[in-house]
Image (cartoon, rainbow, N blue to C red):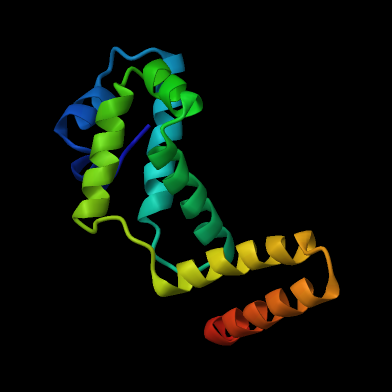
Length: 140
């Protein structure tokens, strides 16, 4: 598995050293790849719809720090608190951020979910107006 120098720098020296350690097991490398992919998804700054959704999902995964996140970190040989700290540091330093287009795509997805869950015509009409406004901003 190869990593860009930029990604290794962002993830921090301690994590980079562990990623490059040749004595890691195949299982550890597999779970390391999950964490690296999540970091890469969060670094994506283009405005693609699916990429925006993936970025949001990875972002939430880091911030929720649920049992799934912790288990993946431990299986990768990482301390979950340290991974979470590095991610939050990237947010604070604005290395990882959401572009306005990405935020519109995320809002668009949430609006469609709200539309499907609307219980009556009035609610759907309100959500439809929100979707129309988002579409104008996205120019679709």
